[in-house]
Structure formats: C-alpha cells, structure tokens
Length: 100
Image (tube, rainbow, N blue to C red; front, side):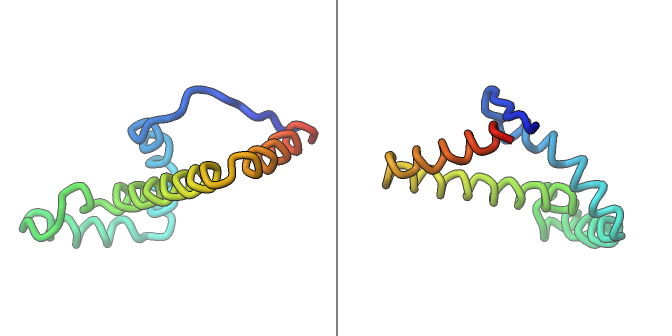
C-alpha cells in the first residue's frame, strides 16, 4: 500500500538539497559533467557565464526546480479557475492513492 506523506512545504533551498545529489549522480554517469564543467568553468572565470551556472549539476537542478514550480503554478491557476472541479479531481487522486 502506498502512503501519502504530508508535511510542511519544502523551500527552494530544501528541494535543491534533495535534487542536487540525484542530478550529480546522473550527469556523472553519462560523462557529461566533467566536459561541461571544464568548459563552463573557463567561461565563468572570464565572466562570460554566471558562476552558478558553470556546473552542470547546478544548472540542471535549477532548471528542474523551475519546471516543478511552473507546474505547481499551472495547477494553482487551474484550481483558482475551477475550485469545485479541481477539488473533485484532486480528491479522486488522493483517495485513489490511499485506496491502493
């Protein structure tokens, strides 16, 4: 049975701490990190690129969180547009998960 764990919302910093190790392992596995970080590090040292974006792990993590927050905003917009319909749909999803 799946359990739905509810707790306080995570901040961007907390989400970054959770995502970054996963992204780091994935980019290292495909050999992308070393190549990108070398080139981007040189660009950052010349101030051609933002230093935060000079590591692929940071860049991918930030873009992932940007996408996540965009999806949350879209869901919130849908809820505000049709609160009753959204509540019914969410209730079905929640209770569907709890019923498994």
